[in-house]
Amino acid sequence: MSRWLRFLIVIIIGIGLGLLYGWVVDPVDYVDTTPASLNVDYRADYVLMVAEIYGVNRDAEAAVIRLTYLGDPSPVDSVQNALAFAVDAGYGANDLRLLRDLADALAPLSPPGQDSVP
Amino acid sequence: MKEERGSWYLLTGLLIGIVLGLLYAWVVSPIQYVNTAPHTLRTDAKDVYRQTIALAYQSTGDLARAQARLNLLGDEDSALTLAEQAQRQRATAGDSDEVQALADLAAILGQAPVLVVTSPVPVDTQIPSETPTLTLFPTVTNTPTLEFTPTGTPIITPTATLTPTLGPSSTVTRTPLASATPEPTRTPLPSLTPTPTLAPPFVLDKQVQVCNPNLTEPQIQVFINNAAGIGVPGVEVILTWAGGQESFFTGLKLDVDIGYADYVMEPGVVYTLQVSGGGQIIPDLSIPECEDDNAQRYPGSWRLIFKHP
Image (cartoon, rainbow over all chains, first blue to last red; front, side, top):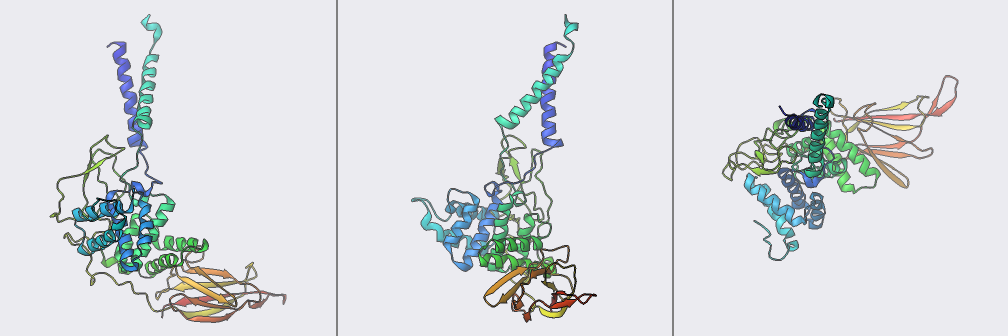
């Protein structure tokens, strides 16, 4: 076996060791993440919480403030994304109604030409 | 010639490989935190999440759902964490409605754990898999979950896509707090949702003068117990006096009791105490006098023990 071939092999072994360490021995710990990184279902559930609160207090301004937590470009996006997910995932009728109510309330904030409710 | 070089080149190659691996991991394709779960959030973000849970609970009264959501945060003791947050926000002059929502949820969780048994609550199973096929609902698995398969670089940055098996007609549901009932409409029926009715107001069970010379400051010590005699955290205790009012919460001094709270009395001030939620009013609380073995007088304390009737 030539020296170059052996050299190449140990490089590959090194990469393998690095990956083994990074993925198995000491894998990444997900801590101190931001709300923007939340998985789509958790984001949708957060929006649902905001919708539940809005469903009682009808305070759209407070809802907008709470939705900024998710770090989306606009709260309207947050609600529309959540609503789309909720429809796909089969949320209950009452939950969908709450989300639609919130979407309707925030519709005036939508950029022109953007559908407010799917 | 070859013999003189030895095998150092192998070590060199190994180091180059490791460097390449790290270069790839840290520069070419650094970690991007996506598709995370609430338990991984920063502390301040968890506080906001928890606050929103409490307010949503206040709006809907759905305790099972609130508990399921709290479970996602991975708190060891949700009631205690809520009480602590209420206390912190109270201390920083946070919105009183928000503080109250936290305290109410802490109280109901602390005193009525049995209520949640009847409702579907997700089971934690934890931690994103490091294998290329990962299910991105690491903290919730009793709910049928959408399976995601990474489409990009495996493992570290799992760009998720929906598997085609899930559609509107699917009989599974997936929210973190979804009902275990595999039906498209999974909102718990009102009849199945435990109504988070607070028990009757706490009443004074005992009022005892405490003469303990080791106590450095005269205190009002409050113990709030449920009907079974177990301490209840997160209960707000309101003190009023001429020209002032203060409130504090049980559950922050676990070394004493989970249902314990205390307040340092000022000399010459007469306090009136009430447990929030319309509890019994205890008037005329001021620093009592105690006497030690040498007939020396010193300020004493009051111990008030409340319980559900």
